[in-house]
Length: 363
Ligand code: SF4
Image 1 (cartoon, protein in one colour):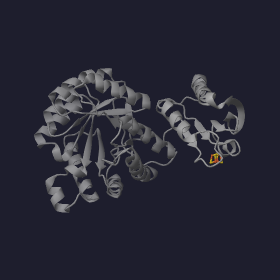
Image 2 (cartoon, rainbow, N blue to C red; image 1 turned 45 degrees about the horizontal axis):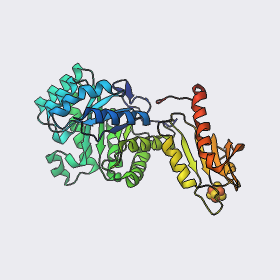
Image 3 (cartoon, rainbow, N blue to C red; image 1 turned 135 degrees about the vertical axis):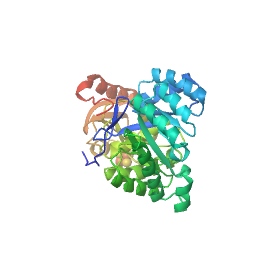
Image 4 (spheres, rainbow, N blue to C red; image 1 turned 90 degrees about the vertical axis):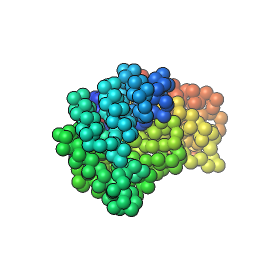
């Protein structure tokens, strides 16, 4: 395990954040929060994908009223995302959320913040101070002219100070910009100054394609330096994609082990099966599969099994049949039309033998 920057441990419901806890993966629903059925249904899909904590927007009173039912039906902790209105924060805490996220530039006067902090303290829930380059306090923006890394950090420190002075320390902090370098610089800077756990991510990162790359680079740099206790990949896409990408980033860095790691060959003129579509279908079918096994899809039997020797299980095309191999050794052959079905059966049998491989959704 890589060395991580030691931070204070806090809780969001039963999920530990910081202090050496596993790095948790978060996402945010994009349903209308007032629509309880649609929101809970999306939360179910996020849970299946492994999401540890979900955030929901609370834009009005009706959304805050819906929270109680949402919290009761969700199996993972729910965080209320509050802008502008401290009453909505109070109402959300009353509804039983496990945490709230407030944006400094939008939070209102100190008296109101004190009321929110008092209520959070009574209910023993945590607060995320979510500094965002798009909503910095006016005086800080004026001082720095732009939302620089230093400006973002000054805003975070000011707000941490404000909340600490209210004798509250169940805090986590995020400092996000859509600019990757500014985000990295800001987190590096703030991590030297505070010991509160850091929620990292690149805000408004873009589509599933560009946003995944930007997030992987920004978050990858920080995580490799030991910075970051919980992550959210922000994508203009189905929130389930955010969870998948979040886990993929953590898996690449050896920081979480959940779900299969798919290896597939780049294909060439030797391929005997349609690697591109088969790999895509396997990836989609295995969303929510928990075991950390390595799965390979290789185009030919000449090089495939050998190239994928490290895979727990793999398939490769050959002239007439498709082959299934384990740890580089061929174990079965099937007509190509049955190959995918039989391959998936083999993968699911890993789950059935289960306990010796199973690591659970958090480890
Ligand atoms: Fe080409 Fe076979 Fe290698 Fe795939 S496994 S890239 S088909 S040689």
